[in-house]
Image (cartoon, rainbow, N blue to C red; front, side):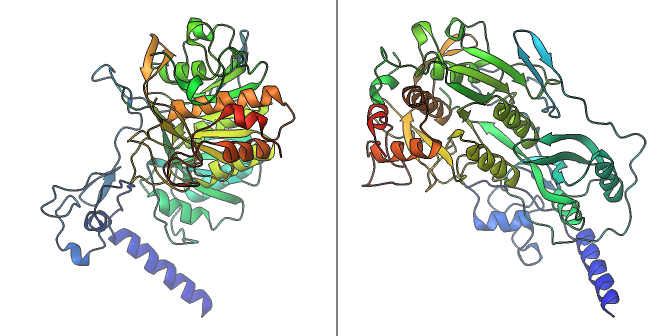
Length: 485
């Protein structure tokens, strides 16, 4: 009887999945509850909804996907976020991880993942081990990321059992297991495939391949030194290792002369089109010459993981693993995306290794959802202020915001020489540079001690105490250096 009940329950679930329209995936904070309900088809019989899933009279609901005839179509995954970009430039999709590393011209190319041969046959009668879950944020619509307990043979067995393609696999240092990127070739929704994979005990964690975006707002002398109480003549991050996960860089820019210790390309199959953002972040941290950064002398380990302003979880995890292997003290992450358990685990394990994690809080406005990785515990979430310590209007708000730093209309090196930049991306770079100064002055200082010192000595800018706009307040490097446990 129990077996019959299980079979009947599975049949009901399968019938419901066939009959129900696909759910629109969106985290747009501007949607009304009516528009969200219409996108998800949860209003009674679709009452008050137009054929495109929007509330009648509202012109439809914008989101991460466009609903037409019950199906979800996501926009191109790579979108140019920068101003002055060439119109009509063709978007490109991030390549599988397993990138290339270079140091003084020495390549280091990991063994490529095995390519599935022959057509993929989808097994029939797959049961759901758990209900399909709603997925927040943009993600690659035909991929899932899974950590697997087993070798390449086990990975292929799982792929065959669930009708998936093995698109890449590698051993992740920070996750401590094998990370597999499975492709969905038959149009099944990501949430359904994640629910099906949960039935297999060899799969440990199952997540969408979320998409993350760099945090540069549209956009003179660098006023940051004065605002964060750092003497430019005494500033130094000499020999402090800082990893930056960002776009490609223009390493011929004079501001980066002798600054880059090593580079890694986490998406080697995608041509480099944009170098501005990464060049600016590296320069603000450790630039030399007229565009001097906060921590001259610091050694930058740069991982290219973004193109056109976007990347995927798989690519970012590859870059994080590489950074962890370089014995860096700081990792700068000037990007934002949805909450993802794999990213949270990687950040938690990096922090356990003693790495200080710095991330942009986000430029998506006061009503935006929390931005990750900044909102994970153990990550210093940085918001941006201007020359008068006013908050950047586009900044995210929330209890996760930890500290403020200059990030509005600052001169920084770029792929074209120099530019005026704005965004929490660049505020994060200022904080990474300030922390490099603290580590240079006291190399034995732990990540926990640095975090406590920053919180205790910040200049309070908003309501008394920590608040959702400024966090603890404006970073004060001099006071943080003098702070004692």
